[in-house]
Image (cartoon, rainbow, N blue to C red; front, side, top):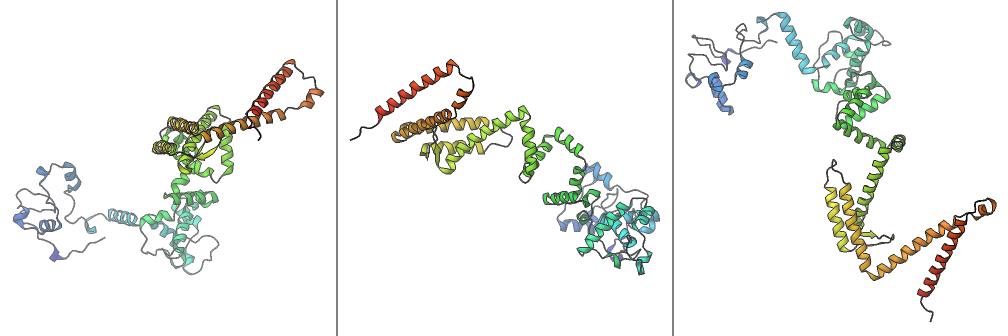
Length: 411
C-alpha cells in the first residue's frame, strides 16, 4: 500500500545529519532550540517529551524502535522493498483486518456446489471437491467456509454467492465477527452439536471450545480428576442438568447407593440439612415443633436465637463445612424449645398428652400386626412368648388402673 505525502507536511532534513522522528542524534539541537513541530504537538497532547536514551534507561524500548540502517527513510514505500515481501505484508494486513472472511471470499466466489446449474458467471466456478483438490485440503473444510458465508449472507452481512464472480473483491466484515458464523468441527452440524453450540452461546463462550471438549471425554475426565476447579464446574453442571434429566438422577442415585462411602456422606449431609431446615423453619414461619410433634408459635427468645444461628450458617463459604455449625444451632434451639415447653403449664400438659398418645398408637399398631392364625397353624410356640404377653398384660392393666384413677370424678 502506497502512502502519499504532502510536501507541505514534511520538514526538510538537516544538512548535518539525517534524523528520524523520536531518535536523539549527537550534535543535533534540542527540540526546544530546533523548534520541531513534533515536540509542540506532544506538548499540546499533554504527553511528556521523551528523554534521551542515556537518561531514560530503558534498553527494551530502545531495541523496540531501533532502526535497521538498511531500511529506507520511508519504510511504507513499496517501491523500496522486494515485491514478494510487499505482497506478504499486504496479505498479512488484509487477514489481520478480516480474518477468516478472506478465505471465505475465495470459496464464495470460486465454488459452485454440486447440483447448482452452471450458467453465466457460475460456469467459471468449480465444485467444492475440485477446489479442495487444487487447495490441497478436504472438501469438508471448503464447505465449512461455504456454509459460514451462506449464513452471513442470509443475515445481510456479505453478498449472496450468485452476485460473486471469480476474482471479485469486496469489502469484508471485521475479523471478530467471523467466529459467529464459522465452526471448524464436523460435529457442529449434528443435532447434538447444535445443542452444545447453543448451550455454549448461552454461557457466553465460543461453540468450538465446547465442541472440542465434547469430542474428547477422556481429556475432560483427566481435567476433572486432576483439577479441583474443573471438578467443581462439572459438579455444578451435573446438578443443573439433573433438574431436567430424570434418567441422570436415577443413575447418580444408583451409583451413590452402591458405594458405602457415598451413602454415609449422603446420610451425614441429609442430617445436616434437616437440622438447618429445623432452624430455618422457626425463622421463616415463626413456629416451633416440639419433641412430641406439636406445632406452636415460637417464643421471641427461641426465634431470636434461631435467627442468630441461621445468619452465621448463611455467611459460610461454599468450601466451609456446615455440619458443626448446624449441630450447634440445632442443639441450642432445641434446648430453648424444651425449656419453653416446660415453663408453660398448658403447653407442658399438652406435650405429655401428645407423647402418650403417640406411644399408645405405636404399641397398638405393633400388637395389631401380630398374626395369631400362624400360632395355631404352625409350631412356633415358645414359652418366652407367653411370658412376655403376660407381662404386657400386667403393664396394660396397671396403665388402665392409673388412667381410671386420674380420670375426673363425674358430678
